[in-house]
Length: 165
Image 1 (cartoon, helix red, strand yellow):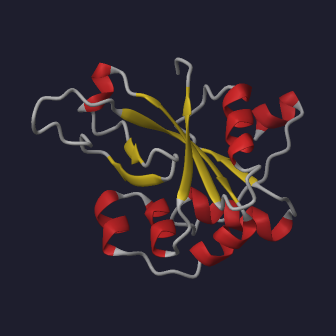
Image 2: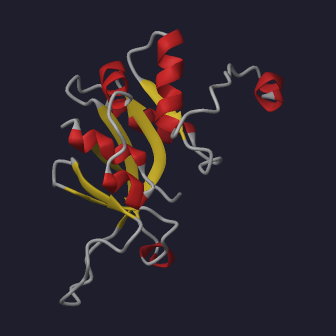
Image 3: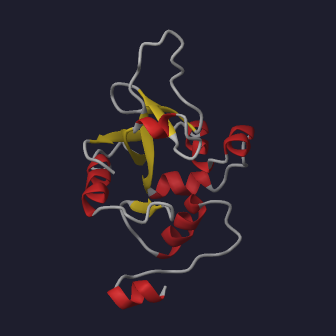
């Protein structure tokens, strides 16, 4: 908080009872009115302003309820369980996120792999619905709470960054 104050950035503490960053964003959405809420994960300390701008551009589409970013995965990230991979439709709708190597390259066709970045944008309605749902077995197994949005039929709108991260 001190660093934020030093730089003149607004910051707020949230409850320690939350299961996820998404629940923390929901708490803020109860106090602060906005069209879109952006969540930068703590493990993304070097986020760039152009990345946030790209994410906000995704949310200019009024049908986008949840947005996130991805980039071409470096070779070292493809099998790294600490790097979350994402598979999307051609439209950018995320189909699945995993710490496993997806897609599986059964026939050695060398598919392109995409790494998910820890940046999210949400509309208030999506956050309000998210916090009403119990944790699913998929969320427990993956350790990724945002897969709850699939249950809600709020697909992730994903956009590929054409920059090195």
